[in-house]
Amino acid sequence: MADAIAAGFNMPTADVDLTKECSEIGLGEADILMSVLPIYAGRIPKVALERLSALKGEGQKAVAVVVYGNREFDDGLLETKNTLEGNGFQVVAAAAFIAEHSIVRSIAAGRPDAEDVRIAHKFAQKILENLSETEGVQVPGNEPYVEPKPTPFHPSADENCVNCVLCAENCPVGAIPVDNCSSCNSELCINCLRCVQLCPLHCRSMPAPFMAFITQMLNEKVCGYKNPPVFLSEAPKT
Ligand SMILES: Cc1cc2nc3c(=O)[nH]c(=O)nc-3n(C[C@H](O)[C@H](O)[C@H](O)COP(=O)(O)O)c2cc1C
Image (cartoon, rainbow, N blue to C red):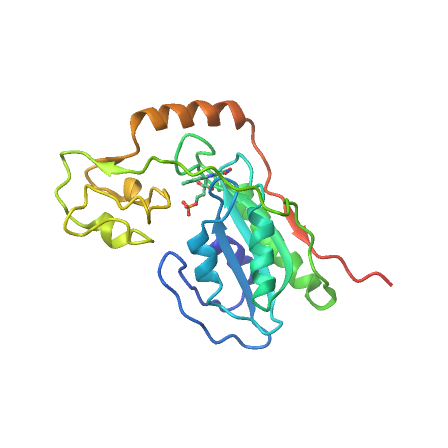
């Protein structure tokens, strides 16, 4: 989604990958920061917001985007906007795009699709059109934010794990020890399931009872095709 929106801006871009540790980048006065973050349990993973906070603004315009798996984005967009504003940015637009649910991959399978990409391009164009006359943007969400319930389950590997370390090298929070890839540090793990998706032997998974529970829960809650909501700032009232 980040690439699709950036393509709509049709201007040079520089990427900062928040799945890795990131440091302050030099932003010019006219640069626009776009943050694209995933929704986990209706919120943004804490570590992602901490890494985003390394990017400090001095009044530059920012676009807050979240990506969610067709259930709900709850308070995640609002906390992204608040974090960006707390870091010195002026949030002029926001959106919540939909992607395949990374726990139950049959949910929102095929998203983002061509229509999402079309909306993403149009979103970027509208932002550019409104840029000179923008105030702030309003987004939905609760304050205080609703606290998600922590899950005691985390991915682990079965006996087929050959300790290839691909999962350990790509874990965004360093939760998988390189010398024992079949395990997982539950204090650090954020359940992003990148390790499950990357494992070439398909030997990492969440515990089966958790998958059965979450699949049923999501299939009950998530229904139908949703269009991604976009939020653009209004011209100041005179
Ligand atoms: C731990 C976890 C919690 C999630 N919680 C939600 C949620 O509350 N609402 C939702 O619609 N999707 C939820 N999703 C789906 C993700 O928001 C979606 O798959 C998103 O594309 C993940 O991006 P990523 O693959 O970059 O992590 C969750 C996914 C994970 C892994």
